Image (cartoon, rainbow, N blue to C red; front, side):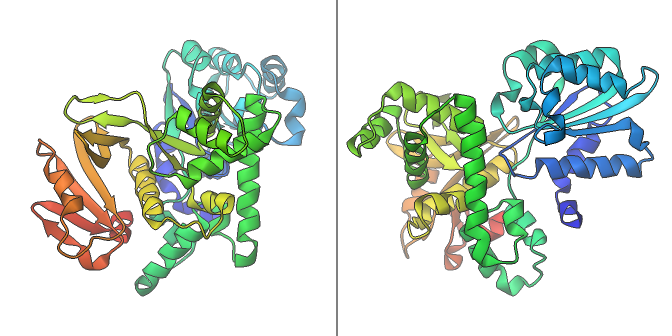
Length: 399
């Protein structure tokens, strides 16, 4: 359990919202550490002298609760173990397994004095009925696999002279906590394949009622092999059809939506920098974990520039930015990153050739004074050119 202690970035958010009227909704890809964070919070409650009888922790994927996967039976079960005069902390793991769980949550709030925390592995958790029943009275905490900084701590690495070697391991094996904790390199791929299969089966095929997974897996492989490339549903459908997997744009759209909802891929929309608006086509997709990509399409399919771009994209999402792909006339800016009072432009280049200004020139043509940064894997190229900070990827990740 001590290895969980290093995800305080998420635990602190739960503590911050403790005993507020908000439902705490923890979302993220399967096996990203949501359950462990919930367990950590349980330990925190106990350390604050909350009696164990006041904490009700349920994992709805556990066999013991298969008879309580609808709102009515679960509500009756919970009322047996609660009293109206007592305050309770409900910690519900993988709540999406419960039919009409939104009604249950709303009923508990009305009936009992309680503080509610839920996790789910599907982005649709926060759509539709939840908003209706809770009227916006929830806060979302987005959990992702390990950042490089967290990976550093999880692996108990403490030799700064070997940081490049640690980074190579990070992009080779990925960032899922259960993978980072392995001491046996020979079983890494098997563990990652197990994670991949559980996401595809439980969070995509079952939820989308997909009977034949061949087309779906070909689509995933296509996306993973085209990280950072602008694509459309039509271009994907044409490519897959030409390879013997006949399909339609509508099918591709539906599958992409399911994959996004399971958090296995992220969509970056294009943003017109001059027009200040998002464009409706030719999005880019990024995968949640490079290890998943490696076992899906093969470790030898190494496009290092695309992998670097994917790593940067995920880190920017972790840092709370809304991340888009910038369009400036005929030029492309890799990432336009915004927060309510902040805008930063990022360009990503695996290498920067000597005396070349191609990567910085795009940034310099942006007609505003917001911060502009170039991230590279070339340590010798770092510094500052015309006010643009050039930073090495590892320094950026450990910042």
